[in-house]
Image 1: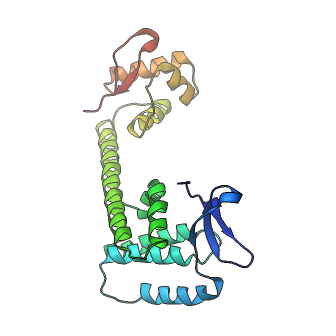
Image 2: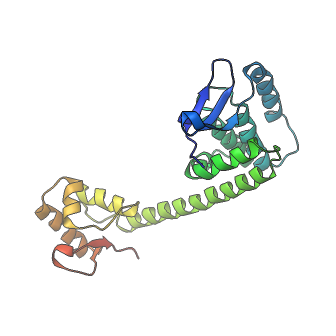
Image 3: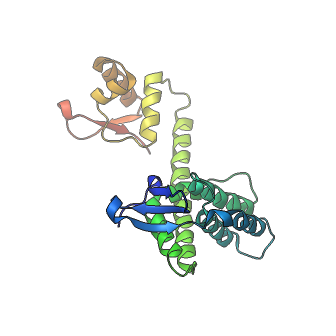
Length: 234
């Protein structure tokens, strides 16, 4: 199946919005939005339902709202972003707090390929949305788990800086330590240190040696040009 992208949306002069893929002579229509003349009615129905106090589990209502809006597809562009915002808005209402550490919008972006596949399956089928709601709930679980990982990293970073609050560290060292505490790619050596902090390799080596003496960095296995370093996280 072709991967559906935003650019695949098209609008014929006398027809509704469509999701298409493939070459011009062999286009595949993945989805066709409601005709323009019915959009006002459909949106009014959706808004009445969304703002009504109905007895539906908040998570289920969030999933239905997302699917409903993106299926109406009232705008030429941005419908997916608005649908994700609506989903997060409903979840925020349910949380009854101004502190939220997870985002369905972000998680759906991470799972975009599977998202488009499940949308096509539902929108071209019988519109039995059970499978969609199952996928949506699993996506929410993934969002919560991703948040657990993020919060664990934040707490680890906070504990590290609390432990070294009185340690004298220059700006280059702070920059590199924060990168190592986040998602540093690859190994750390003097060349990479010098490139990132825009200093000489001699200065980079002095910075590293200083942090080793302070117990912040440790030398990994290997030596010479292959010498690399990592944070001493205890």
